[in-house]
Length: 267
Image 1 (cartoon, rainbow, N blue to C red):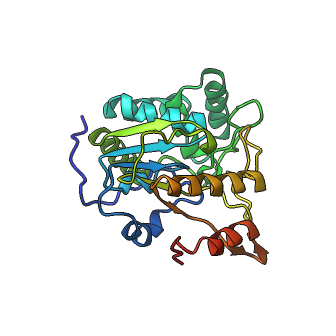
Image 2 (cartoon, rainbow, N blue to C red):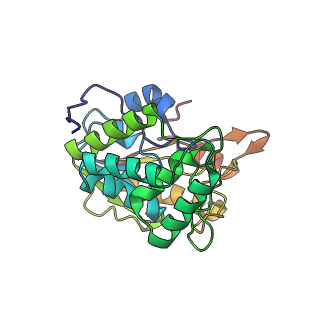
Image 3 (spheres, rainbow, N blue to C red):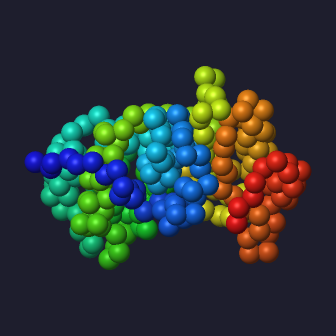
């Protein structure tokens, strides 16, 4: 049996190697946040790297990838021992390894038929670059990570610490598109963090090819409008974004930043 312990001063790492995760930037990000936060909203949660390390009375994670959210909820609801045993059982049952592509594909077929949230985690552990991809039928379709991806001791330790932190704190999950997130009831004691897909980059999370909404100029404009609305209500926020990338320029974001001189820009 795994004995839980408190991780008050320890940085918690996501069990997922999430593309665009902010683990390495936490020392720069967290000092910019308010010292006292009642409700913290991680609006584009992804790997949950930011929200899981924020000191707040309540933490709200949101992501429009519903299967990812269901996995987190299962981590929270099931006992730690149950989750770890399920992972070990699946690895044994399907003979998963760095070499066994057939076993991986068999588990992938099983997950797509049954949608067991814990099976998704096992698939991610052994998938190419630990990516999370679905097709338009919402079937997980990331290829096998031969000779490079597996469920290793570091991933297991991160998973254990992550689950313990979920259970020790007041954490809530939602699976909404950001424009449908309900901010009613929030006040100037609350804080919203946004790490959306970046308009001028080409991550697999924003290409619109996972059976879920992609990220276009329309979504970019709507998010900036949402943030202005939060500010008008006195709700504090932070936004991670990119002004320029490989010769491309996010003109919408640039105009918004320099038009709103009251907003602080940190490099």
